[in-house]
Amino acid sequence: MSNKSSSRREDLVPGGSRHHQIFPTLDERQFAVLERYGERRRLKAGDILFTEGDRHIPMFTVVSGAIEATRGAGDKRHVLGTHGPGCFTGEVGTLAGRGAVATAHAISDCEVIVIDEESLRALVVAEAELSETIMRAFILRRVAFIQDQHGGLLVIGSSASWSTLVLRHFLSRNAQPFAYFDIVEHEEAKGLLERYDATEADIPVIVTLQGNVLKQPTNRAVADAIGLSPDRLNGERFDVVVVGAGPGGLAAAVYAASEGLRVAVLDTKAPGGQAGTSSKIENYFGFPTGISGQALAGRGLSQCRKFGAEVGVPIEVLGIECENAPPFHLRLNYNEHVYASAVVIATGARYRKPLLPRLEEFEGSGIYYSATYMEAAFCNNQELVIVGGGNSAGQAAVFLSGFARHVHIVIRGDGLSASMSNYLIRRIEAAANISVHMRTQIVELNGEAQLESIKWDSQGRIEEKPIRHVFLFLGAQPSTGWLGDCVALDKHGFVLTGPDAVPQWSSDRPPHYLETSRPGIFAVGDVRSGSVKRVAAAVGEGAAAIQSLHQYLALNR
Image (tube, rainbow, N blue to C red; front, side, top):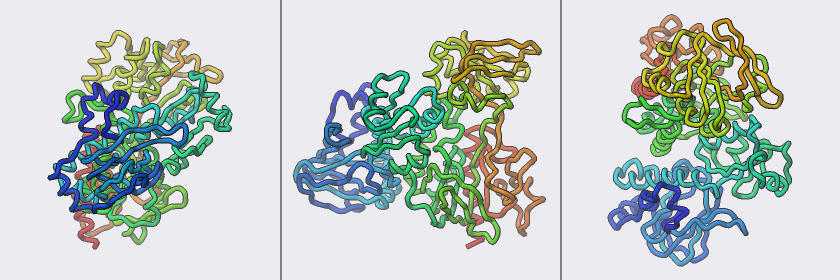
């Protein structure tokens, strides 16, 4: 990144008003603090500090001279700008050892202060004032990269492709900058496919910063290629492994790491969980104007990295071995594994799929399970249906009503008041282009390559509607299949904790309130039986679990 102003770069932040926060200049007093954590080094003009994709790179602060930041190579080389005296390199991924998103080299003889990854984390924890400056700049730089359509990965896909939508969600929710070209909407997309020796049958296609071409890649292949997946995880032992990076899991990881525990938090998709797809959460304490689920998750993730938690994405826990624990042995995908002295289950719940013929056939081409700007673009000035009566459905309806011609909310019950917050009900009632259909359910999906129409049963009357977009926010299925018989579950598959786990409890002491039937394994958030299915409740449980976990660790060391 750069401290040299340019109109395009300043436009990445509305009005350019935060430019001084993205590219701050440190003073002599702050330099003195930095020197306690790093060392001075002299560079010659032309020296390379790091290149795109390099991992575990230090932060460089310029004392004298100048450093230039660039992206791409050859005729695609793009100069981001220049760091002068008092400026520093890095963005939020630097704290976690992720792949560098730019190349930096000295453009003159210069002197720098070099702070390695471990020392940088120590600095941002111990030095509150300087930490605020560095963390704010790191976070805002990542935001700027995401908004910059000329940087990051190149993705070529199709709006009619489910795998393309899945990949775009993965990159977006993991805050990875990318430029997207659609073979239907962008004329240059087909030319790009030819240039990179690919065809429409290969989509989605990714071209990395280094020019590597990935055809129909898995999320893990993409993560490996861009330096997102963890490279210091396999075979390691942690004080705490948190399975699931939703609000509850992130809160548990932040509190555990901030108290000095060695923590890993693992998730199959991205930080934020189900809440991460919410366009705006308006009843979360401390955010009177609301906050998107992704923004909230991003802040939690930055805190995790600040305190040194290892974040593993996309990592799936396939099973857990509880006998002879601790340590607990967690088996991961790709033949990897980790050990944990204690485990926090925070895998949440996923939306239930209705028993509808051809449902999976239309996933991504008319059937959706989240409502983000990507899906909203498909529905511009069209009619759509939202199935579900909970807060997620209400938030989606309010959000999509700003794009769609009309939004139909379909519920099987007699009203929304039993399952939806009042503020959302009032918004829905006030919206001229939202209608609620009670005692109604979809019974048929029709179309060829894409959804073209639906039939619904409204109080015994079958009606066909030329609706091409259906959003499903139905109930909750707990993500507990990986647990086997390690802990006790209720009849719906949610994890029993505290007093409810006593019948299967084997220890001499009583279980802690958030502890499962297995000593040392805790459960928080939506995956826990009897939990309040709200973001704030999950965050509170994540924090509370760590206090009990500390007591468990003290007894078992």
